[in-house]
Length: 385
Image (cartoon, rainbow, N blue to C red; front, side):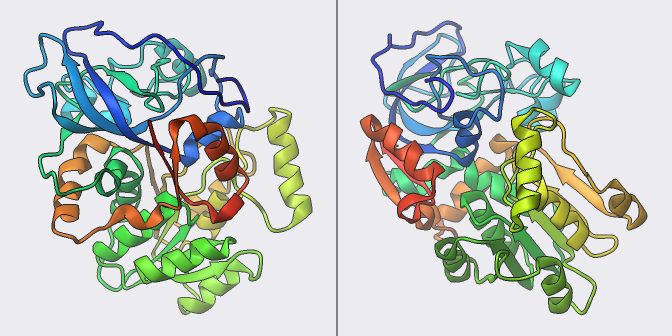
């Protein structure tokens, strides 16, 4: 793997390096939208030969001597943040901020001031761990992270997304502190946006509005989350949201887009893209700016789209003068896995609706190209080793 190139190669099998490790044979893994940030070289720290993939599940084939909660043969879903379970952050259930799992923490500290947790397959900024788009993966702190799936009637596709996008979308909605009657707007109708919209409904939002430009994705949000939708290339989103909410704006706005946002006006899009290309900013943050400007006075902006560094033209005046609350973070996946598994088991959530492509692991390069360039109405690619 190198920037903008994905290849499938034979590599040595992973080995137990620590008593708290497990080795998992991958049965299903997915390409995440944030994998595309690595693919496009928007997140630094990727090296040739790195193994991508932070959404995966499989069968335990080996455990270290200190792992007593798992046994060979167990079927598990693995959360994307790697967490020790014992540090100050983990004790507060802030698992994506684990203080012990990022083995390359100084690099993250240089960019962000402090380091978050290590993440599978997400560059040498976040630990340089091998990812799960492979046949086997080493899982550190296996006594803390993996969730055992004991109901054999559940398919991989039903539970795979507990590793990332389902909890991330749910946390994005939960951060909004939704009250009965609230209107929630979601920027981005990819998988995280779909699950954020669905979760906002589950948490009591009266109306959910999803903003995107891809017709198939907007149709999906209407069908599965009961959302109203806006095509930002066909309408003035800020004006339309005001019109839909009596002039106030949505009570909460969720940014599920992140650093590769697209602006409908070509000159403005070119401005952000040129500055990002020249490394004068790391983000194209149009969706975030619009979410902030759209939110009602005193409302909440929830940011779950991934950002890497520094944004230009951040409307801090709007945030301060209108008493907006901004809440954000990489998802603390461990906190949400069991409650969301329970909702899946009770058939309250069926996450499989986002899957548009099943491919073999050997077809991963094609999967990345299809997903990156929105070919064949792609929303989610699941790879099967």
